Image (cartoon, rainbow, N blue to C red; front, side, top):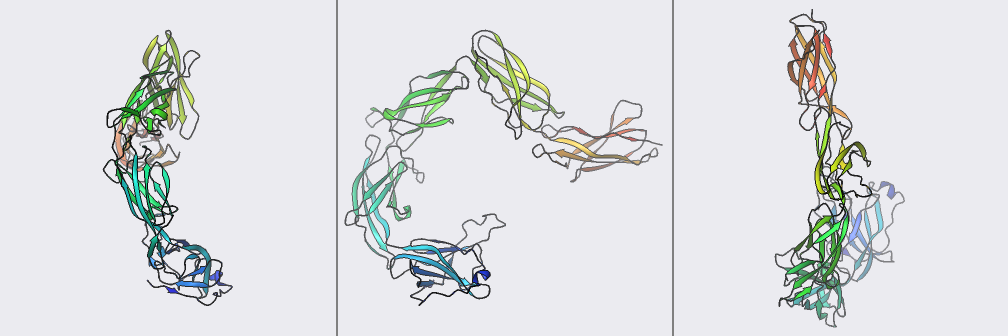
Length: 543
């Protein structure tokens, strides 16, 4: 790596027509670090006679010219895609050793397509300054929730990039950082700091180790973590307990109701104390919340029938994961808690069933339930059928079923109890996406017509399927097609043969002509993906 330093004795002249012949009219992407400059032209092909020129900010005369660069390895060889990625595009200078500290304007110069000089000025600013760094960092103490204070000692220096010499960072600003808080510290005249630090008690685990510890980072203020040091501090983990104010909650089915309680831990002497303010908790897989003063918490839990809800205190280095359970007791209400069971026959018929749960019904009654459908891409529920469901007094469950409904296309289904003044409505979960593809025979022919008795009869056709999501018809390959014949004057169809569609959905079958009659191709459908389909009738006259 070579670099030429010194005054160039003037400003480079750029021909007026240079931009017209600039192979990179937008210039390179340029960024700087504390000691080097990075360029990216978006391609592996670099311009000829490439130079980086540095000027003191506010002046026109370059004080340094860099002509040698290192190629940087492409960090992601499949961006934007493995086919379109331009490859290794980044280059960088060496660590620069300039004569003076300060801010420098970065210009980029190279040859145009006609050999003329192209100059892109002020592509970046290179800030050449003393580099702060933490050289020593220690944390002393064995913290727990009862005593979260430790002692921090550290030394920081300033490195001069001109000669790599170091001096103490006198009265420098440092930042001590954990996953829970940031605290600013100040060094003394010798670049030294020694002070106490108190953890919040809500720090997260350091996942880089297998111990029960937290990571503590000390870095110069305004500098990246790479200029600092990280230490792992092992902490004592206390046992915890969640105490609910009530183990049950009351509310209408499908609503959220308040829940409160207190989270505590036991110290090393077995004394129960509140967990720290801000300890993370949740109604498991529903909502998150945090503890407040004295370990107290208030949240809401869903009443979803009598399904038990889990209250979790999430583990940290200070406390283990702990659970408590609350049992909902629904007031007068009715709803559905399980996903509807939907079947689609190959003959375009829908059947839907679900369990209807009723709670605290004051007297025997009949509840009206709507079977609703929401088409793919729509936000509107359409009622397809209303069903009367008898309900006994108190709590009861009953399966509601609707059968043999016409298939309306791709979409989701649900049973919905709309509620009454006396009986509020509960949940109405929707089904999974229900879809099957239509099938059709756009082509079908039996030839020749007429045909001699005993001669060969060639039956051809084409089978297509309709994509239920795009609405487009497309060829249906590798499908079994059954061929049927009905003699003239008869009502009974007989299977005469089978063909399989090729990659274009087409099929051919040769049979013997014996009688006058109708021919038809049929696709029987399958268990899950395709509906039944049949072709037109083709009458063949046999002589």
